[in-house]
Length: 89
Image (cartoon, rainbow, N blue to C red; front, side, top):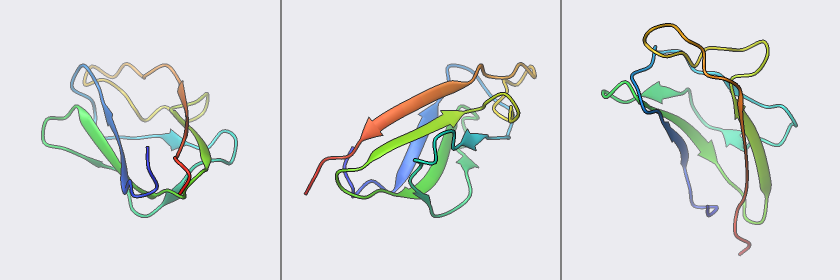
């Protein structure tokens, strides 16, 4: 990813309920610039964010206490951790 990225997008393989738990397990999330929104397909969640060059970021979808990512059938997503580093200038 580059520092010019303005949103993080996660797409699921099935329709989801409208909740979202983007969690910060290691205090390394990007600056969040808005609330998460769902696209009309019910499978794509978008989180507005501002990234800095040369930074490592870590976030999780759901965790032990926050389980708002759930399928339309009400099954919570198992916590999923993501790590990425943006390119330096």
